[in-house]
Each structure stands twice: as C-alpha cells, then as structure tokens.
Image (cartoon, rainbow, N blue to C red):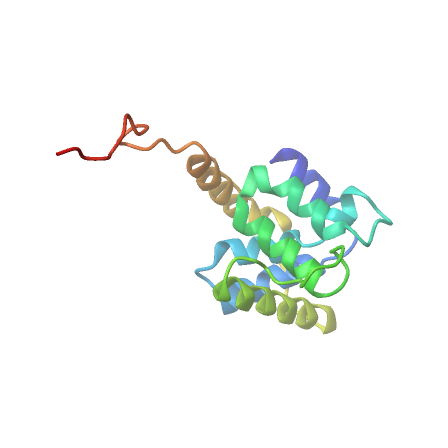
Length: 157
C-alpha cells in the first residue's frame, strides 16, 4: 500500500483524483469502481511511454492487492478506449453490470478531463484503498467452512 501511495503522489495530473471524486458522487456504493477511476493510469506511471499496454500492466500489478474486479475494470476500460489492450473485443468479461461500470468509468474520465470538481487530496483515498485491499485479501484466503470434498458422492443401491 505504501508503494502504491508513493506512486500516486508522483503523478503530475490530478485527473485521476477528479475521476474518482466524480464516481464517488455518482456511485457511492461502488467502491471498486471509484478505485478503478483513481488507479486507471497506474500502468502509465509504472512504465512511462508504454501506452499500448498500460491498462494490462496496471491490472496485473493491482490484482493481488485490490482483487479481480478492480483489475477487470481497469483493464477493460483501457482496452475499450483503444489504449490498453492488444486486440480482442475490449469488453470487460465480467457481465452486463461490469460493462455498464466500464462505460461509467469512461464517462467520468471524460468529465474529469474537461473540468472537474475539487479533487481533494490523495490521502482521502487511503482508507478506501485499505478497506478494499483487506476485503480482497480475505476473499483470496477464504476457506470453505465445510472443508474440501471427500470421497465419491455417487449412491449405490
């Protein structure tokens, strides 16, 4: 988390903050969408000049920390706008709800680029990043309360 915050502090543009702020206002319950708006350009910061694959790189880097959906939204949004993928349909692959979330992310990025609300400060987003990361970690380490299946379930007689 510390490395991610340092990386974000190094960004000269506050468009990501404005995008996340717009998504927070329009979709207050969708924390993962808000973070996708905040982190959409992480791939550009990780590997400047590699515009073709920035969304893929960001998704791969963030998936272990923030989970599959944040990574899926970032990758799909970059692929759908023609800047992050390497072919394919550009769809999110997560179903109609995620397709709508990707469209919402694009609209918020466009609105934030034109002019945006007060973006706030990056530190305002740390609690949400930590919350989603903690949830992702719990989900990845979840153990089936019934334990692993044992034996055959076929009946005889």
